Length: 296
Image 1 (cartoon, rainbow, N blue to C red):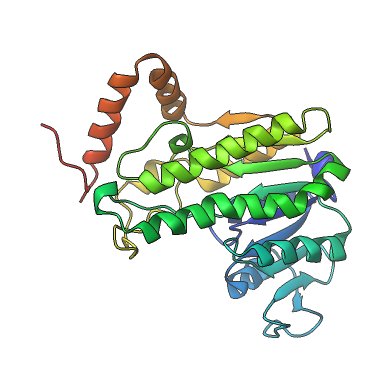
Image 2: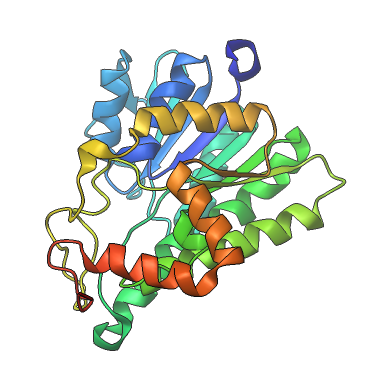
């Protein structure tokens, strides 16, 4: 696998935590040149330092800023860190431009940036729905749009990190499911449009993964819920997910659903949709402080 990834240029959005951070570490260990994109440049600089790199920002000290666009780059030119808010089209365009300016190509784009929520739709402030669509869906669209010409040139790979909630509606996660369904529809269509261009498109659904996404998930009024309602220790680790993702990219997979629960849910939803609805409702209503009514 190391030979495949050596000197590949890989953009990872949402690179400061969870699956994104684990992927950055894994790709770096395989010899790739990694572009870290996230909203906090401070976190990105710490990650680059953690990976054993002495960082600079725009050729200056790491606390420097240039036109509001901070970036850290190792002296060995293996890492590029760019402050990026994927809800802003211009940010996505600039981080692609900076990648090309620095490395001259893009081989892989991992659209990982995402946020979640927990509330029933009737109670939901629509601004929460807009926030999830802006980050999860439009962030993927913006980054893919500007990276696509270079990915076609390199016959590279676009990845969309979704969820089983992008295949089956998840109660009390209305906006999250809607955004992930949208990402899947967008990427599956993109794959067909470029079927004969050498572009690989991977729709990647890891299932429940240990991360901080549930701690910062938005509630009905848009405030973060503060703590996870699930046992994170029983979930698949972000590091394992990152390793599986790397293998999937190398093998040019089109779709991956990782967990046995995720695979069983997809199978059941196709063959026993009513039963699946009831099982999902019961499972989500049993979460601590669930907004769903409990069924005895």
